[in-house]
Amino acid sequence: MKKPAGFLQSPTLWGMMVFLLSSGLARAQVELSEPRQDNSPFFYIDLAGFRGERPNENRLDLYLKVMYDELQFVKIAADSFQAVYEISAVILDEDDFQVSGKIWRDTVMVKEFETTNSRQLFDATKAGFALAPGKYRVSVGVMDMDSRRTSFRKTTLVLRDFNVAKLSVSDVLIADAVGRDSSGNLIPYPQVTAPRQERSQLFVYFEVYDAGADKEYKISCVLKSLKGEKIFQKDAVVAHTAQIMPVIVELPNAGLAHGVYKIHLNVKGREQQATTEREITLHWVGIPSNIVDLDQAIEQMRYIAKKDGVKKILSAPPERRREAFLKFWKENDPTPGTDANELMEEYYRRVNYANVSFQGFGEGWKTDMGMVYIVFGAPNEIERNPFNRYASFYQGRTVKASEVWTYYELNRQFLFFDETGYGDYRMVYPLTIEEYLR
Image 1 (cartoon, rainbow, N blue to C red):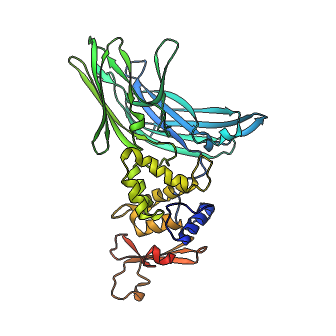
Image 2: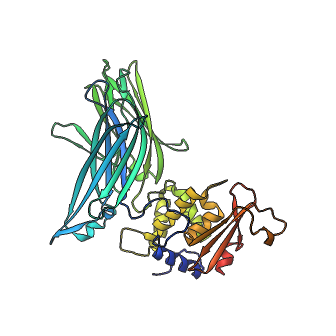
Image 3: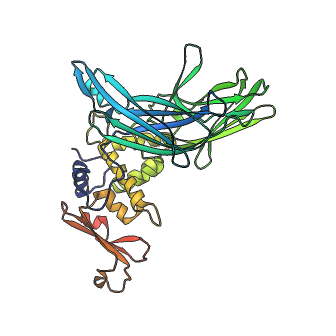
């Protein structure tokens, strides 16, 4: 493996990252549990509510995508590979009573072995549920039928009553393609928050329900950043031709950076108006799914990249920032020629774990414990000392608690003190990571 361009100069750190990447999570961890099963099939889901066919009934549509590379394909013929996975969906009401559910299987067939390892191709499936308006909890599981690996996702949602007002609008569905059925009706193909291709399209799909006599509606679709900055707005007039009117608005896909956005819809008739909004997360191919803010992800490279390299990427124009970010990681890909960049995925998995496990007075990745975990991974052993066992070695300091992290393979220990009693651990030995790497 070549030494990465733009990496920190220390050969010790580079060797450390290679070692920990190769050993990965196979090493047993004493007390740090990982946030998810890394060998589980990973899938994306999206949910959207629409008016049902019966009075006082809604239709909840569940959309699911599974990446080919996450499935176990089996060769069944000279030029044929097959993967089968099972999906289970359970819907509970506010009292945790199961009101609906479904179990089904999907089969994926491909002709070439290389396709089985694709991280840009997905299998998509869908299920619909007839439900009354209300609050629900949805649990979705996926099991690979060959390897028997499983993974689960849980979420909550509110199904609004689309029959209360004369004019109402459905939930928003994000699609990467739109077609028509044999009757000419619009058919959206949901994007399901899966990574986007450079040349892919992006659409907002929703339905307008109007029992009144309006001949047309004024529709406004606004896309904003989480900071409230308006990025895109589309205003249109749509003719009223049926009680259920599907509407499509195309978004400027190529100009949208990796991150989280908010869509606000307003539909206005002569006397009535309806609004709805939702957050959407947009992922570009090649960027780990746990990254939701690209600028922050670039800043988080400080433990693995040169300081001036991080500044250079952050100073690039917004439309070129993603390109510069991906260029850095492509140059440092331990397995060039494959879709996956294991070093980038492992690095941001550690960043995500640090944010979850070491958050206190600030972001977890910025803490001393977070820094050590990101650079060196989980320790082989953690000794917790909540009663100031080592205070005698540090006179004049009020130490409420301490932790010692031991890495057997590195023959090193890291000592952290909490001098406040509120879990704010600071590294006291070695004084800095740089000191250790000398």
